Length: 78
Figure (cartoon, rainbow, N blue to C red):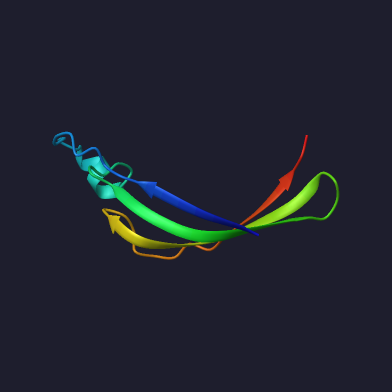
């Protein structure tokens, strides 16, 4: 088990005119920022194969989705 803290703050260094495609898809949003705290678990089945799971929860956000994102992964060491 691992605990983590992730804070991304915007520089707020001016305005930008976004193309309509960016506004429609949300691929880039000006002044995007967030703060997240969470836990991550890593389990190994063998010496080179394992899984990960992460459960973050935001404590502040601006121009980001308001949703908890439970994620899982499988990895192989090379």
